[in-house]
Length: 240
Length: 240
Image (tube, rainbow over all chains, first blue to last red; front, side):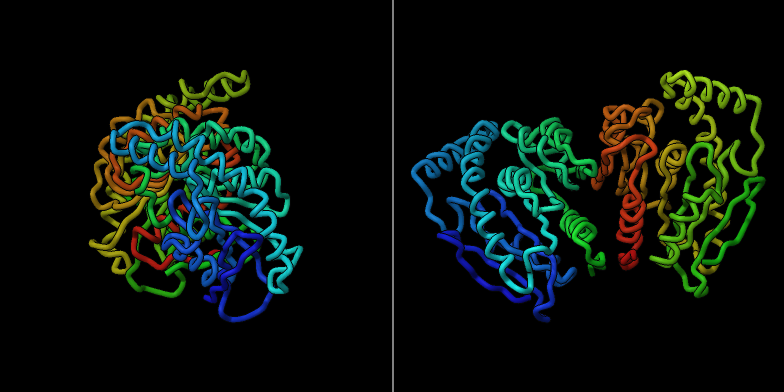
């Protein structure tokens, strides 16, 4: 796997590609989770599955206020409020939902500019297949992106409150796979199912696993890879 | 794939095995759907994935009143009532739930005797891994079987009403994958989710797909194969 740092405007990102060379291959845009960043271990692991298993290119950019990007005073306030709610055992939705709406609004044009730039690379190209994968904050950003970006033809989402997302869900018609945790102590089961229900996609699959918010099983990462491989037109990999 | 017909007591079955020979391999018990039988095309297709993809043995037996087995007067009455309800667009649950309870009760000891007999084959053996897969009637029969049969260590279920199944679900603790159709016109979404919720298994995953009762996508058959391969200890196959 070859890792190349890049910047588009003032947004830092990383492109991971097969070591074997410059054959044209599908591109997966990967949104990281809340509090994580473009080189978080979970992103590296998922990218590795896609790059080495499928021969895909995988791009991650830092979300606004994350990774190498500055936090605003507003970000700092929201994060402090979130830590306080978590310490008190209070619901996080009322803080996370409006918090995530802001980076989502900013990130849509950032992802589109990034996609424009990446498609200029000969090993990606302007007409190759493009997918999206991201859960949590990666879904808060990815859903409005996929809703308006016709170049993205398949997406993996999950693990977010539906409140601010119904509008985007109703605009999304590409195949989706949607992960939720059946015993999620942060996002009620019914909220996750309501968001899944709202997608306009003719092909949509929800994967609900027993366990709490942070207990999503590893095999869902493999499943996301197979879903993207199926839709972006590569042979389904055989993970070890 | 080698196909061998067998009979245990007066129950006819078929065992499908890899052509390549007598190496010991895991066994999957497969329950057919309502109105189908041991050699129905859907069973042959799923068996093919498991035998050629994973090297497993796959056994299917005719459920009571199905395939080569006689129908009772009671069966005939229930089938006539079901056809009438279907023609009138009435709910099928009130007919199918009690109808399926009867073959389920009969089939549990039949499956156990079949498993006893199959484990005497050297290419299966008494201590090898055993899984179960069956939806619809295959779930109505399989759930009470898996609830009482400790030799079965992983199971794929789905597409049944929960009414008569809660007791079995609460006794089942092995990993399960559970399929349901999000727009099922026969089994309400809430009923399918309630049944999934009832399983005592620590590892359980529901796969809900957009579409009606008979529109379950082909990729769920592939998913069931990977689930069984993961739990019965074979390399995950790479389907074409």
